[in-house]
Length: 313
Length: 255
View (cartoon, each protein chain N blue to C red):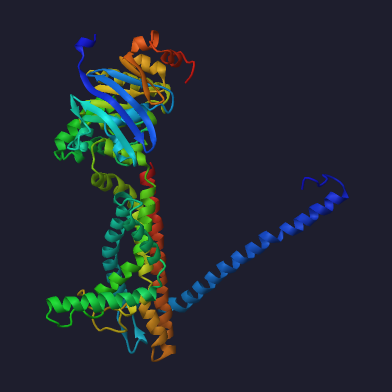
């Protein structure tokens, strides 16, 4: 542009040419963004329109009946909540402990800690169906059967699909999310705080317990909520490890099977005896699942914002 | 004057390396009880490193190696049998940039006590009040002990850090340029504080500000490139130093 003359007819033509080259760009990108937003709106609209009709209190609190063509999805909601609570109990302590170990106890160049870091990164990339099959092979058929042989004299108690195994399999899937969120939160803590703690005579564990973990709470909670919102929607990890098509009872023991929202959507779409009759219920189930996921993500945002305000003061 | 004083801490033939970097060379240093000893010198001369060897804060640094002896009341603090956490309760530290925890004012001051195992609420209350009075902060915060510490101004936060360090009743207080990030009024308050504190504690202070060193200390050590060039009574160091380099530094010929 340095050799462009500032005035005159040549300059004018050059400027117009530049303008023509550059002005479509915002139009094109704007249009593409609009397409994406429109797609989302269309999908949501389709689901809301199709599903809001059946979304009654009765739908949310009764069991399915008449071959899934009537009734509600309460057992699936109950199963999802129970499943996710168990998963959280497993994944948060394990994830936080791993992050703490990697950052404060492991020597960064030791082969063991490098192996753990590689394992965590790769775990995040494993397809959920593979994790589901692993859950079946390891938890149900190895650990479960092993427990049966050692404690129940071979009688089939734990060596079968169960909500415990499904929740542990889900925990495996969401572990990287918790580890990474915790790591991020801990990294944000300035070393000043740690030095202040040590200078007062604290041990490493005391520093972690009293300074690091409280300050990382936002990150840990966010990771937990994201893990929950991911876990509530995954179907592949629970398909072989405990989810069931229809159960006349609610899961109350750890070795019970359970119904679940995501799995219920799969079931309604593929194994329904009367597709037209179950379609409205399918829409409503999808809507409930989506609302649950949105609510959880919104909760994560709110919790994060609130805690950040309290800490940043 | 020196016969009335006892040596509280002493370094002999102290050599310190960060990896291959030999940062302190053969330092011999005496710190006298109930005095303020200033460590002065240009940036990078090793004065902060030396300060940190006094409470073993360099233990955390990867690749740090120390040779020689550092002792308090005649006992070597680098003996393998020494309990480092107990040592740090005897030798406290205040940092250049104030670093209160993300907790309430009360919990900040009580932190050192809690980790030492003190649970009695009454003892905690008394010690917190005592420490805040000692650091001239009590009147300003006595009604807001539960508020977050980060709400306080820079000068108040630094005084809070001093209170926090004093709460564990140390014998020696190490201060690394405690007022360098503060405005002149806060700095004056802290210098006044140090004057009062020396009656009960032994204070070692690193400072970039020579006028400050001249104002508040009784003894001064001048460091240059990892060597202790000169050590002596502050008045002498600033008026009739024996080493040329000391004279050049205190007269501002280089900094």
